[in-house]
Image (cartoon, rainbow, N blue to C red):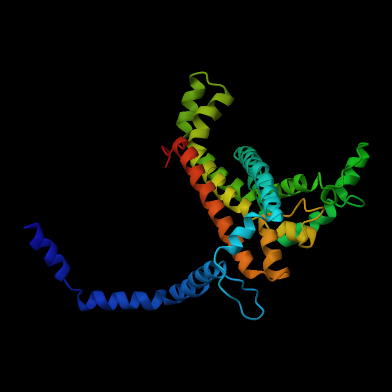
Length: 308
């Protein structure tokens, strides 16, 4: 009986109306489909192919197998750039989440003019990254930068910031906090979804403000914090524009800001080692994939979706 039913399903044909609707659907979605194939699928496939070649954008190239990947694991600059990337990521992602959460908590109160305050804290996140980096290049200038001038008023000698190998990475971590407005808005929306009756019940039971935050607010906010962690992790490995602008694409001083994405750019567009750069991109992709999967495995089970 089941066999006859399966065969009847397979033999069922589309009506003329269904076929016409399907064709019209393909017609209207064809620009997106063609764009996806042409600008995403094709470059992805060719990038994977070029990673096994000696392609350099000039002259002929040949298939060299795993040579690029083998050379990559013996490249000291690659390991140094990966260390710098992970260093910045480890500090900037948690710090960014904490600062965004603190701002969201402050902007979640009901007070006069709160919409203006929310707009002020959100505006930096929509300023173009290049423009922000140029401005902060002057802010962190050790000679005439406004930050060192302010410190000088209090009798503090400011560090070299981006001109000091010891302070270059901490400076980039501080700079990453400039754009936490997007995350702040997401966490603010999460805070407003926390059930007020649970907060009131906890307060009636004698729970302190900290206990209410820890046992009521944080569980309902955990999906938003998990989203912030995953997206921050992925974006951290792709950190590029501010470093490129502030160091003129060199990763100075003394290679202390040479991050993975910048080193990839140098190999592709400065040294024209496109095949080697593509191999680097795929290794970086695998690292991001593994780190994301590991984070999901460790953290996802602790996320509370009761408020969803």
